[in-house]
Image (tube, rainbow, N blue to C red; front, side, top):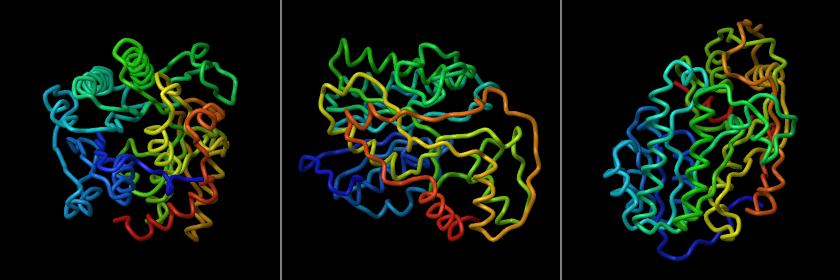
Length: 327
């Protein structure tokens, strides 16, 4: 269970792109605690310096400030690296609808740069972040790998992630670079940024409630998500790096396998924070799906993924972190 007992070869070196971001910084921290060298590549367009500041004094941590859109930077970052965890991307479905060209540059070309750099530098395993949004609209739940062929992608973000999966599969097929992708389902937890218009829903709710403000719920609040705690995502990344070669060349659902309505999330947060504030309601966000839920059986079977953290456990842990760290 979990990832504490994972054993990597002695002297392994890891690269985490987007390592100053929410997910990336947590992966960096976990690897450093295991006693291995970690190189972080980030341009701080969405990542936060404060996420990696605690690591800067660690001799096993190296920070490269650079952009995945620059191929030479990607090659430099991959030099001497055994395992790549490629988390760098721009998220947010609504923002991608406003900025499709930028999402093409960062998510697709940036990932292609990293795949090619990893191939040229002899990286052992390339794991990367995809998204549950690749399933699009019109599939039956729970979402199962293969069903994405039946859905219609309804945002540039979803399409960029889908294209990246094809490139990763191609690099496994024709170049022999071992790739594994993760279709993340609504990841939450410590270090997830609560600030800004495009912030994810849980930290946005927490920030408003701590400040005694009424947040806005887009839609009727009955939309549901398969919320996935950050510890489960760390487990997936680390286990995928050592999964059998036969598991490579494809993407997997990474979730808990639950389904929680948004209004229930809000009420739970009110209880945990001791607040009694009625939310506001706004229009549905463009590009959002009404419901999501994952079938994680393929990840269990092929990666040994066995998530410990349910939503109810993770949300308590996350709220405690925000109470201590939210400014």
